[in-house]
Length: 92
Image (cartoon, rainbow, N blue to C red; front, side):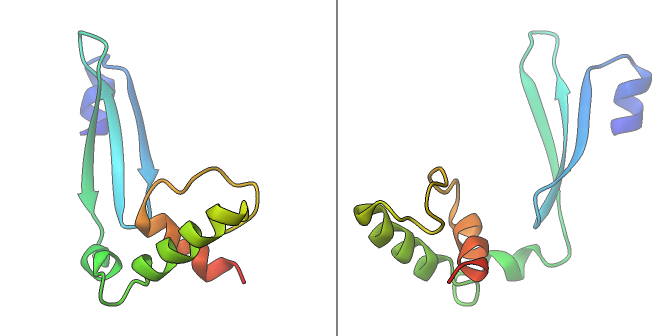
């Protein structure tokens, strides 16, 4: 799809690695960005709330936010629970 978009002269970006999916982006004639994404083989396991630790990471982040600490000090608010789970694994 990416090669075809480029061959047709469509503004394209990607692929972007989001961990559990890969995305490519196209700009439509009205200027809107269109994202096409494909799941990776381990997508469902990463998104499984029973095993990914996202809920616990979000609870720690929320508690830390009240003290100004968050998960990693001055980092901006977490964009997703999956990102929170990844950050929780890399912080004490």
